[in-house]
Image (cartoon, rainbow, N blue to C red; front, side, top):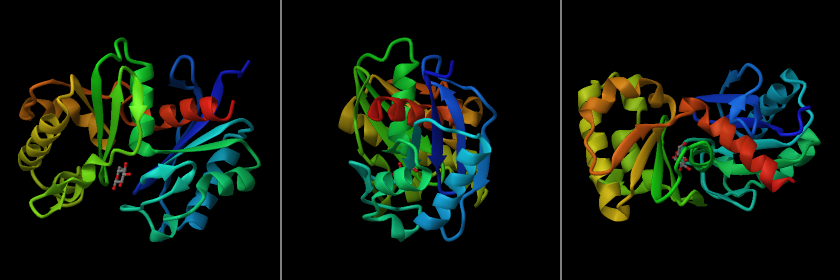
Amino acid sequence: MGIAEAMGIDIGGSGIKGAPVDVVAGRLTERRVRLKTPDPSTPSNVAEAVAKLVADHDWNGPVGITVPGVVLDGVVATAANIDDGWVGFDAREHFTRALGLPVAIINDADAAGLAEARFDGDPSGVVILLTFGTGIGSALLHDGKLVPNTELGHLEFHGDKAETYAAARLVKRESMQIEWWAERVNEFLAYVELLFSPDRIIMGGGISKRFDEFAPLLTTRCTLEPARLRNNAGIVGAALFAMEETA
Ligand code: BGC
């Protein structure tokens, strides 16, 4: 019992979500708990929230944690939508010690991409998962294998970062009409297609819950689909990664 379980924790710009995951079936085994991302979102404030999630679930096994930034061997290298204190922070070392459990750290969109590739009927070809939330995250996969830290949300667009131009927060917080947002997303998708010619683009992140509403407004050459695991893809992918990295 419980052998193929790891806990996944998804640290985002607005919320920190976590749950134990059955990594064979790709589903949460307990209720997902969500805490607001503390302000300021310093490593120590976030670490307190992470410890609370782990304690709430009485969890005692491997833990996978996503971070919204580039992650190189457990160390966070960039922090666009989270406190600057994360840059250079050895998250794996810190959380391993603080939780007293085996910990693996991965970029949030990469985690979602891993989960979608694993629980997808056909992961073949070039697949790009894009998360639309506070920023825009990306995962590039070829035949199910991840090329980590692609950061396509940081491509330059109209003199700004793509994620500033087309993030989903524009719809949520600044109540931009969904049609306007979709036009911007279409420009971004066309650019991504021009650069990578993917076979499929998967849309994840907070906005994926509303995929049916905005999908008719989006145009791509390749297949466009919502993340099967919707906004839980990050949690499931973090758990998968932890299972593999800490085995
Ligand atoms: C970060 C990425 C992250 C994305 C989504 C971007 O600002 O640079 O690493 O995946 O936001 O959270």
